[in-house]
Length: 136
Image 1 (spheres, rainbow, N blue to C red):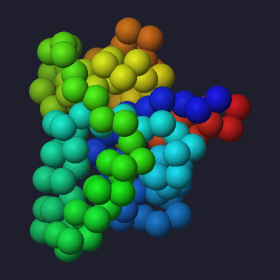
Image 2 (image 1 turned 120 degrees about the vertical axis):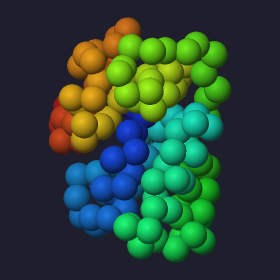
Image 3 (image 1 turned 135 degrees about the horizontal axis):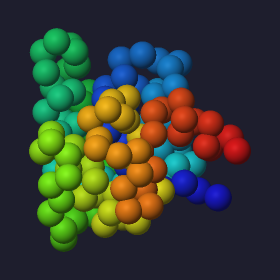
Image 4 (image 1 turned 45 degrees about the vertical axis):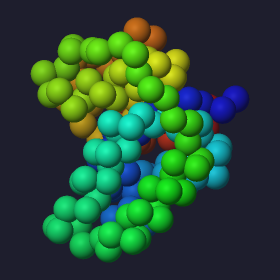
């Protein structure tokens, strides 16, 4: 069964910075289509903005190529509902995307940023917990 997921930005950043890590494996599984990754325009823009921060040292063309490949592998959704359950407004964009996509999971390294570990049937899990769910 192919799991449907939305990856928080920290998963994408960790996956690109730390080859061989659990987040890197999850990004690879999304690029291969093993995980059905969902994106929204707001999430794609957040990925772009964060990856281009000077502290990470990525070249613009490298980020652009990576995001292009990720977008080709993922399914783009355009959320129609505005959600305000998280105190951190950008985190609401991930909830909106997951809800629109009918995703099974939001995968994040910062589960504490989300008010609940489940939101309308969507599980909010760490990369390690998501990797375990893929195996089971």
